[in-house]
Image (cartoon, rainbow, N blue to C red; front, side, top):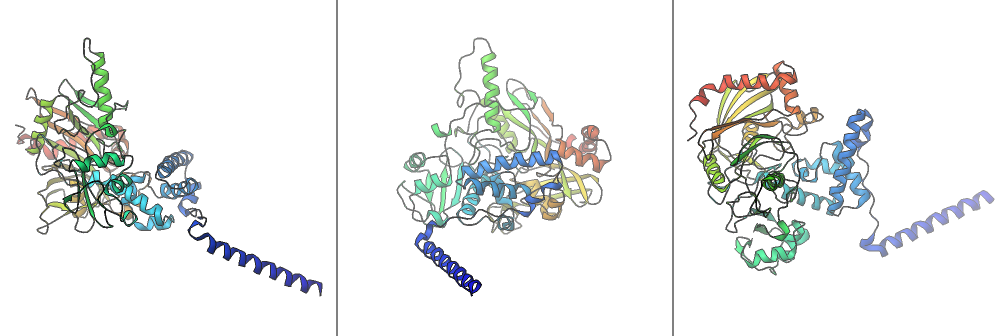
Length: 518
């Protein structure tokens, strides 16, 4: 009888506990405790990594978790998300827009957290996907090259009447009914409501194509357009950043941009850009010059003929993860002359890329590029079906291959947003490591060594803006691309740059000899 009574008593207690739990859940309503995200299986497989790779993954996880926490993701959950995303090759919150939605599902990123991350990553990606200006003038930089933004890249929006960089975005469901200044502040941290209120007062905020006041209400799905301008909140402060200088004089400087470096400030990248590093370099040079006057960092160290205050010295752009030669101006005259040279296609631009498959030994890709019809974050080849499509011409030479992957030298005749990446993907030979246009299977197979689009701006030739003499800069290949290139070419990595010079000279000699720089 006693065991029977124990069973009855135990069953009664369990029923009572279940009833209390259900009552509390109903009473708690929306304040229910949130369960932490389950640990990703890929993250649990870290024991297969070497000690160095494990340390690097942990470092990247910490950095990504800090980014997610800054976006108001709960601390412990941010760590769980970061572990899973890092294991899948995502190293920045800005990279999330380029991944398959299944990755977010696999990492159990749902609800408000997913909205926040996608909104942030899409805004950051706009710098890499916005269409280039229709022409270069004193108020807009020349078209970007091959993935030109960027880091940046990717990069800025096209010029608008506000004299700054233009952003176009859609109002998410979570901001339905919000004031327009509050909605913009929520979508573009760390900028404040007062900043956007000032822009609206000057007519630099449009909703559905019409100017609005700061108190106007927006609805989910509304199209917002805003022209950013440099003010106190966007002031440029010189930052000591490592810059590799290829050529420099008192008029121009040519740098070898590293992967991950955004060219100039844009949403998601208000500091740590190439422009910030250039300003610091100019400040050091100015203070080292005897008798020089103190300079204002944003208005006197570098020229800014666009007037936005966000792009001093900039004349063209590279994607955030594209490496290689990029030229900047140190005087207003040089900036105008260089921008005109890029616009008139008087700049010789040669890129190296590792691509999937085995393209033809030489291919002329003459295919217009415009915004993708359904995915506004992407560009696409638009053959006769898009008014926004613009002429794009790439000459591709295969210089090494193993039948599975190839190394190509690309001569750019035009400079459209993501041009090389779009053209090679359309031809069936996407750039290895490209999360936006690449082959997902190849990217997964080579994830350990191809952690970015393997695209490098190897060579620039142009007329010097002051003397008219030929300015020639060659950027050594970064380690990741050099390793692949050396393997495909059958040479040692330390011999790769010399081999690449000979190979590109051989296939491009005729075109180079007939090229017009003036």
